[in-house]
Structures are given as structure tokens and as C-alpha cells.
Length: 96
Image (cartoon, rainbow, N blue to C red; front, side, top):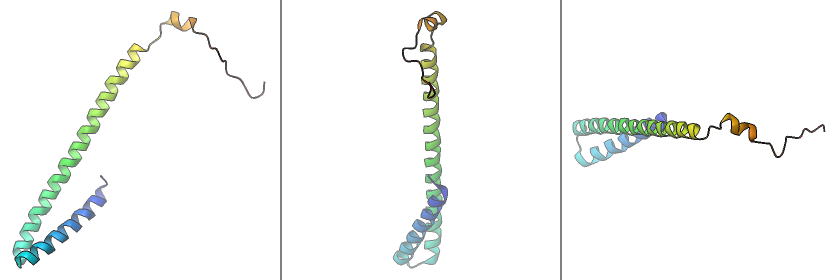
């Protein structure tokens, strides 16, 4: 969620809402307070959405850390095993 895009979209939505409210009610005062309430609700929704994204990213990061720690402990090679491993295709240099 790119913040400037969200704010421009929010202002556009509030403008359309205010126009529709004014056409329906014919009252500038009613249009003003209903648009203000709508703006507050939009901000609350934006805050909840950002909070959910941060929570989801934190959850994924914790899961990745747990998976990484599990794989690093299970894939460690003993020193005796490492000595017995032989390279079947040694690296070749361009000059040889």
C-alpha cells in the first residue's frame, strides 16, 4: 500500500461522497459532517489494513526464522562425514 496513492484515492472518494451527499440532501452542513465521518472511517480502515500487513509480515518472518533454525540444526555435517565427502567434479580454470 503506497501511502500517497492511498491519500489521493481517499480524497477522490471523499469528493465523490461529498458531491453525492450534497445532491441527495441539499444541505452543506449535512454534507460536511457526513464527509468528515466518512474520512474518519476511511482512516480507521487504512490503519487496520496497515496493521494487518505488518502483523502478517511479522508472522511470516517468525515462521521463516523458525524454519531456518530447524534446517540449520538438521543439516549440519559431522566433521568425520565432511572428511569422507569427495568432490566428483573439481572446478576447472579457464587457463588450464
